[in-house]
Image (cartoon, rainbow, N blue to C red; front, side, top):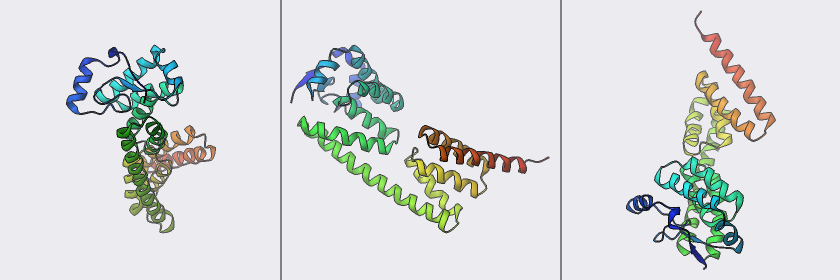
Length: 240
């Protein structure tokens, strides 16, 4: 396995000390005992990443944001920039998968670990390979359990007409998997049907954002109609 050590300037001495004390893994970006070491999996990586200061800077900032500053959402933006340049960047894939888990983006985390796993196998990086496989299995099981809850909630809401009983199922899914598209819709609908109009309006607004991001015209229009509907209900209940 070919390896190259990125400049020590990539990680500050202070950050390295903090991460070692806290036991934070930097595996996938570099050897856990050699902070800054990067596994090279292709000549393209060697030719592009090491000669582009922007890639080095993005990795540096992303690792710092994720492990030192505890801001995975900001870190994702930096790792995404690296992956736009090189979709098979070994360290960026490992770190963005970790960041997706910390932001509870379960599907994206599962998908990204799936992309990283064959690279770890190719690099004969046994610890990272084992870690990726464990995360893939864990995330798969977690999503399956949440989808089972989703089915129960949908049955209670639509087949049995019990929105109050369905609501906790959708709330559990929203808490564990905030970006779940279907749960956002069903949660908003259950809140509306239980008469929680203000909470329902907020939930419909969140779903509207998701529908627009997915360019789903039908769901966008349904969300807009629901927002108008619950706002009218709120106004009708206002005194005076």
